Image 1 (cartoon, rainbow, N blue to C red):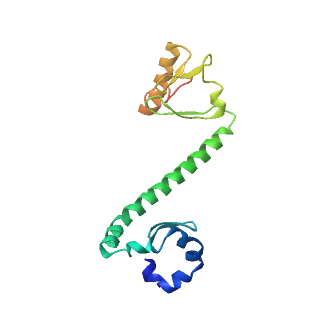
Image 2: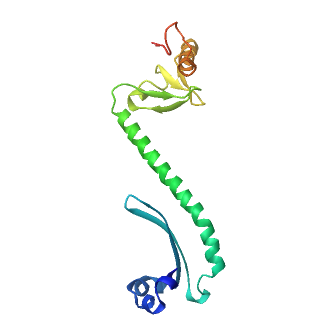
Image 3: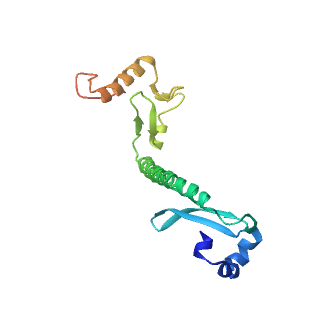
Length: 169
């Protein structure tokens, strides 16, 4: 709370107030630091002009009640950004591999495909993606075998009497 941490006479003479806040009619400030991570911090500041008056106890209590929720939302956001960053690194690494790599979920939907694999997928190519995002082979028979291979990986069954998965040419 600016009024608690910086007396009016100091605030009014400050460069920040003189150069910026005064022209925007910012007199009362309420700030909370929500998170610090890797040398950076994130916070939220509420401002109001002098004419409205300082933040009252009820407003401070209400604001304090939502701060933990804002902090948690920011923590979740930071974790999601970190995961996205790792995913991007993962994808970039696989894009440098000369072999085609396609990661497929249990339903056969493509979750990731590197650049080399994209050369084999599309109209007139050995593989394609159907309208729901599942990988398909060049004909119905090969698609059935491909889907059986995918299922075998997830359920532990055998397609050709061997281990999980198989190969399809």
